[in-house]
Length: 188
Image 1 (cartoon, rainbow, N blue to C red):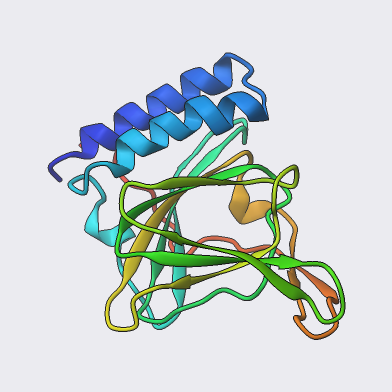
Image 2: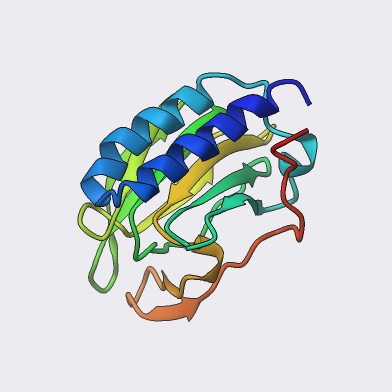
């Protein structure tokens, strides 16, 4: 796959950042720059990690063996949306293809929508319990898939998180897992 070297270099740079014992602030600045460099080009994501379904799929691209970070491709089917959810760890979201809309939700019964952001290719935003961590994300395109690349401060597929009932604000715990049992070959 042409461009897999971009993904390999990003994983190496993020591993160096993790080895420097980076705190959340460093990840949200230095990690953001690394992710922005990766999503500035759309020639590196292997096809197996860009397959859309009727909803959304979360593909693990790299999981740090010490679970200091994970790198994930989110593939949004046309019109797909998440429930209102949180992350419980810091994260970075970079848009690779298409566009997505993130709507922040404020606690309460019913939950109230807050800030709405539209993410376009090449843009990167942060999520964190220290910022705004409860939101709903949707593919901005009703007629085509969109792909965003996420970096989280843990193995996000194994983190216990919550989805929220928009009418009552009630929380229900979940663990997302991943949509495939394979990883890309960074050395291809």
